[in-house]
Length: 403
Image (tube, rainbow, N blue to C red; front, side, top):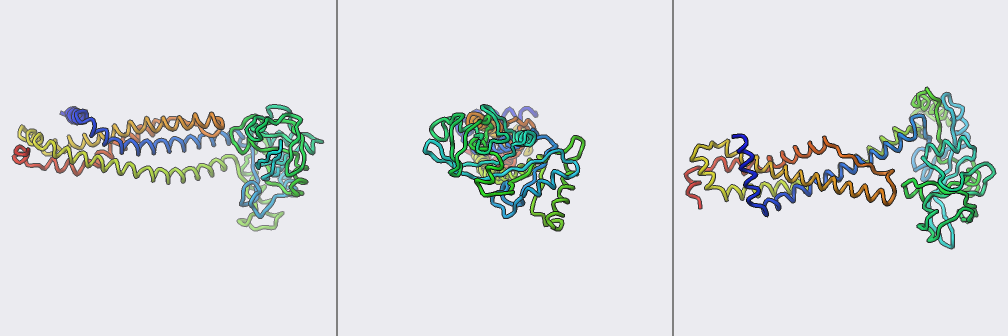
């Protein structure tokens, strides 16, 4: 008997193919949109977590409060702050960086991008490279004595920016100041980084008139020291030096995990909004199922009368129509899942081709797939409750007379 609850509805769905496909459209469009958005969101979070976990748990990032790495903030970190951080208990090494938006000119063409001022000390320079996942792919990095030398991002070594490949030894103007190109970074996969430049900190301070001003500071803790404890000590030392009360800090200290969590919160909020919009399609799909089931009740009124005449009870008719509407939701969800995951994979492929694999890592969440199928089935069942109740309450005598 139980198998008949599925056998008869499947037969009816296959018998009216066009109507069934039109009914499924609303469901699978909504499910595809939701699945693709959730999968892409999870892919971004996975990539972000991988990027920050690669930095290691022994890194601390100290930034002016507000703004973006010192830009757009009324506060500034200074070389005095760097000295305090270097002397904080538990800190193995610390270095400061400048960060600005600059005018690049080469081959009589101009473009604007980020530029960083970095230390030429080998250990501090290595810390910057490790914390920022930068690696020199061609040429060499800046070193002591390289005041007007520059290392450029990967895109400059192609013909994508100035319509001509920049070569090692070429001269490029930064804010109308001439620098000699000594190296190119490997491709990072982030356009802002791949189009950026890196110059000695002393040259940065001169070009941007930023003497003793730092965009942010990177600190590395000793092995065995808890970075969070070191961060608390560092915060107290800086707060005392700035003569500020607790809670009034003009700086912030972040760990890689905290950066990842902050990005995750933003992504979750964006996902919630987009999924809310996509859910409208599900509502339309549910209404479509309800309309289809009402039509099915009218078309099969005589059939319902025959079933009741040979012994079918009201609950049998109710279950038949509920299962049928649930199967509309289930099949629509199944198609939507395939389309949604397929779309997410295409976006991942486009990301890999365009910017590299660093920013999107798609993984199929089977728990999400199973949960979505159950959810889709329930949507169908809920949409079919009213038509199913109507079918179950039909009078068998009147139904047999229906033409």
